Image (cartoon, rainbow, N blue to C red; front, side, top):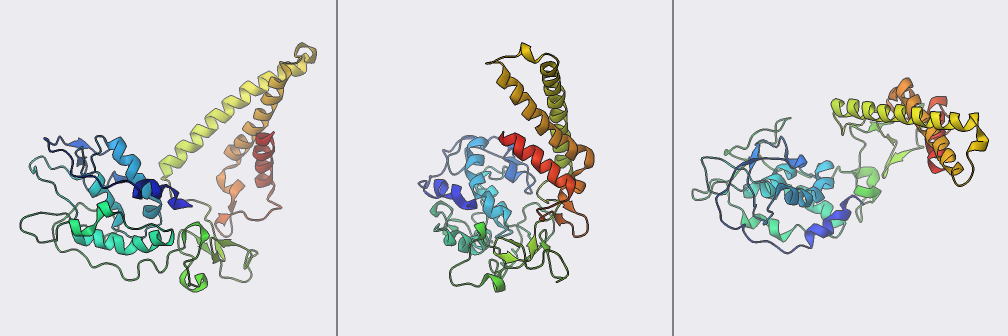
Length: 322
């Protein structure tokens, strides 16, 4: 399941405060914490991580919870703990406010409990300062905006009510004693199928949610990332096609030249030749023509077509397994 990596984190003993030394501000490099609202952090952090690589390995074990958005405050809270903000003119630690922690815990703790995990003791909300404390400053987070905003020191927003009620359970599992037909809903970016005339009506489900299809264009990557992936796969598939086609053509010209144990190399080259053709067909025809249902904007579910989808599948699956 998605939370498989959490036992590694939750089983760690609580770490004390990092050794006191002059903090040197450094740009945040942890992928999950880039663009969180501030750009500079310092190491070691309060969990005694000496480098951002160490902190990143641990904080990314929470990524499944961030991805399902069990709480809009979770990402900011985790980053403020693992990559604390560094202000050149302010030498004291600036932890998140207790209210931020409580909102994150209220939204995500029920999900963790479904898999037998408790909220980490090392991130206990009771250890954090209260907003308005005159002795210890803390960071709040304005989560009412659509985009990530810098930390602020004003009054925090109220926690969202019933945060976890409308979540689709991870791994397709239902919470004990609940009816997923009532509590789980097909929400964007998933595609709800509500018309009985739809060919897939009452035939598919995503997790435990019936009549819910996977979108053709995944929202998890930016357009630049998709463009680069298309270019990178296309480049190597063309190079693979050229090299393997040359090898196979050389064999066909003079078959007697290639005997065992060299001949299996020809078989491998032939398989990679057809695999590269599968990627090239997708590159030439385009993602939409191969994988997308143009009428309903979700991926193809039919097992009999269309032809391009079937051809690409056979080339990649059969020759990839061969």
